Image 1 (cartoon, rainbow, N blue to C red):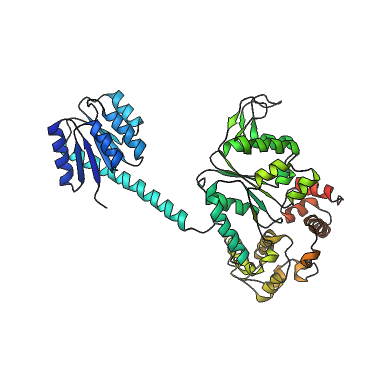
Image 2 (image 1 turned 90 degrees about the horizontal axis):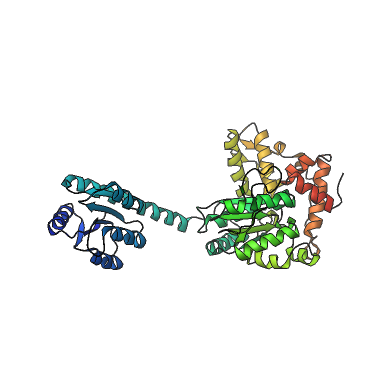
Length: 451
C-alpha cells in the first residue's frame, strides 16, 4: 500500500512529539500541529488519510476538527484522543463520524493497531469507490443485444443521455424491448443505485393507477386502514418507467404533468404536498403527435415527455441481430430448463432469417423458449418450431415505405390473426402478444375485434 499521510493535532508538546515519533517509525508521513485553528487551515489545503486529534483544545476543539474533516473529506478517518474520556463525549464523537475514541494514557501498541485498522478501512473505501467508477466507465449498455448499425447508434445515444437526468420518451413497436432501453438508461445514470420501478399504464383503471402511482392516506376510501406509499414515493432517488403512457386518461395526465413540472404530488385523499426526486421515462407504441391531434393526449404533457426521444427499431429492420439473439435466448432457456441445447440447425436459422417477426424480439424469445422445451437433443430442429412458422403460412409482408400501413392497422391485423390461431382464447392470445388481458380487451374494443 502507498505511504499514508496522517495529521496529528495535539496541543501538549510531549504527547504530540510521542505520537509523531510512533507514527513516523511505522513509515507514515506525519504532519503534527499544536492547535485546532492550524488544523482547519491545513485541511483547507491538503487531504489526509487519517486525522488524530485531541478533544480539548483552545479556540477550536477536536469536535470542530472532526466535523470539518468529515465535510471536506468524507472518506478520511478520524481518531479522537482525550485525557477526559466520558461516555457522552465518546458517543457524540462516534455519532459525528469518528472512527474510534482513544483515552489517555494509551499504550504504543494500542496506537499502532488502531491506526493500522483505520487506514485499512480508509483504503478499502477508496478501492471500492475506484472499482465502481472503473466498472461504470468501461461497461457497455447492459441488456441490449445487437451489433447492427441501428442498435449501435441506439446504445451510443443511451450512453450519451443517461447521465443527464432528463425525461426520455421511448418509441417502438410492441415487443421491441422498450423496457430494456429504460433499464439501460437507469443503469448508466447517477441514479443507478436507486430503485427502478416499471408500471404498465394500460393495465389499470384510472382509479387503480392513481393508487399505484401516488399511494393513499388512511381512510381515503373504504378499507384504507393505513397510509400506503405510491410508486413515485417508493422510487424517490431512482427511476420510474411508465409503459403504454398513451393509455393514461386525460385526468391522470394532468396529475403526471404536475409531477414533471413541480416535482411534487398529493397522495389520494391527502392534502399535503409530497416532494419527490425521481427521473421519469415513458414509452408507447403509438404516434403521440396523432394522439394529441385527436385530443386523447395532452399537448403540454407531450412536450414535457419529449425532451429526448429514442426509437427502438423493430426486429425486421435489424435482421442481422437474429442469430445473436437466438443464441442468447438458447443459452438462457437451456440453463433455466437444465438442458444442453447448444445449437440451431441451418434450416431453422433460414426460416427465422426470412420471417418478418411482427411480434419483434419478444416473439423470437417465445419461439426459442418453445423450441428448447420441445428439443430432445442438443440442436433446435424444424420440428421444434410452431407449425405456422415452419410451413411459412403466415408472413405479413412489409410493403414499400410509401405504402406502409399505420401502426394501428398493423396491430389490428396481427391481433386478429393471433385470435384466429387460438380459436378466440383471449387469455392465450394475451400471453402470445406479451400483454395482459385488460390491455387486450381495450385493443379489441378499439379495433372492433370483440368475439
